[in-house]
Length: 196
Image (cartoon, rainbow, N blue to C red; front, side, top):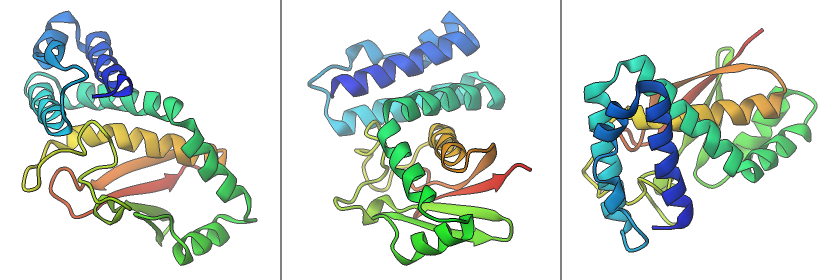
């Protein structure tokens, strides 16, 4: 387990504490103190899987989404270079449709974009990445095949995708999670809707 992953676990705990209080944080973060530099990716993913189960059992949907979205916004800050690269790719094209056409012809490894009416669908295909995985997030990429976890966890990615598109387009967007590879889908699909 890396220092970055330890910081991500601490961020999760801080967000649970802020939204739902100390008691909820204690319950959800049960066992987190045992995670350390020697914790392997499978054990880490299994701990996160359990944390999401405890989060789902104890908190309302809105609270869970708020907690994980805060994690996603923090991840966007930490990984801002990826968002900046996406923004620069978008800036090369005069229109959004030109950008989407270019991206569909030469997508980044493990991704795909397409229009669905006025919405944009962004797909992540972690199994097709340069080294196949269950999820791009390092906290859960080690989840054994055949196991799945709550899509609550993917609200983190939803918020990351929202931040990425808002910065690339320079305007607010709403993002909905349609399916998730870590919770049983073959790919992760996010629906991006421009707010006018």
